[in-house]
Length: 71
Image 1: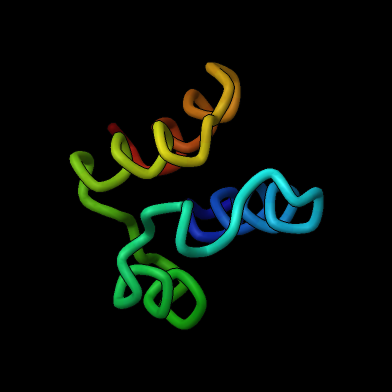
Image 2: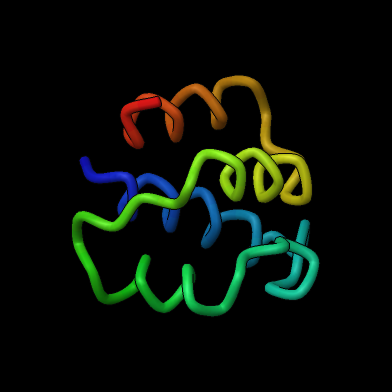
């Protein structure tokens, strides 16, 4: 699984459950577009850390994403 696949799986689950909105996620629009269109896109580590916090990700979710990103 790519970073984009793993990230969007978590994102979709949180959006569908009503936990977050796109605005609350803190994802920069350009990064979101890249996630949706570029299969090997990976967020910068600083951005990923901020987004994980804003999306209230669990330790397991963070671990999955950091591993997929290669950090």
